[in-house]
Length: 251
Ligand SMILES: Nc1ncnc2c1ncn2[C@@H]1O[C@H](COP(=O)(O)OP(=O)(O)OP(=O)(O)O)[C@@H](O)[C@H]1O
Ligand SMILES: [Mg+2]
Image 1 (cartoon, helix red, strand yellow):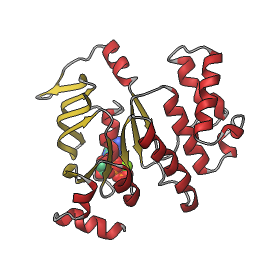
Image 2 (cartoon, rainbow, N blue to C red):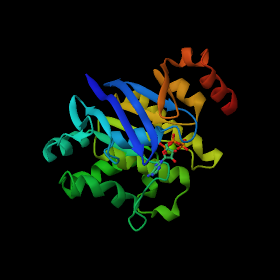
Image 3 (tube, rainbow, N blue to C red):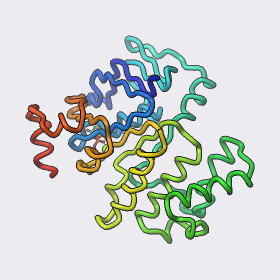
Image 4 (cartoon, rainbow, N blue to C red):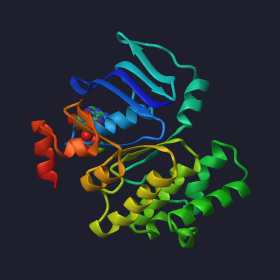
């Protein structure tokens, strides 16, 4: 089944064309990395999939259900119930963690399951502890975000995204705000999820070696376009000059 489906998606910020006629199909269970220069539209692409940005043209579907549909500039209304049930399939991890500073680690993880999913407190505590154990932070359950390292904060953010049990996880440069020695612990958690969870994962990253290693598919974006969409092997040996230049600069 298709997890994510974009058909002719265009997105502008004012006069700036940020996504240009994007067509993309991601199958359930695929691990896809998105690479490309700064400003190429990677975050915007993820944000439109999360419905954090409106599009100007095209269709976005999550598990075959449209969450955005604009035909020739005319927005087709998506019923609220469809939208909210579709968005429940998605979890996103941001570059800057986005944790609630005044809540403990446990409270950060339990917030959405209790408030949105109406999970009981007991059940959510059990689930949160299980997730914290998975990311290796059970001993920090009563800490506040300000008491954690960047790598720990990001692992809490991953646990928080998982608490809603999404089938599809989007990561936007999850390690780029981290000191080099903290990058590895976060990549390890993402690698484990990629290997074991069976979830569909879309990872925007500048960690090229990591991307090539864990993904079955790598997408190179430049200037609002998908320039190459291929296997890690093929991307490494690309003949496309833009992709080549990017890979040479970054590694
Ligand atoms: N809210 C906004 N308003 C206006 N322009 C924006 C907005 N968000 C992004 N842009 C512009 O859209 C373009 C694409 O930005 P985007 O954040 O998607 O790039 P990116 O590929 O994620 O870059 P990076 O690798 O630096 O994170 C950039 O030119 C950016 O300046
Ligand atoms: Mg970005």
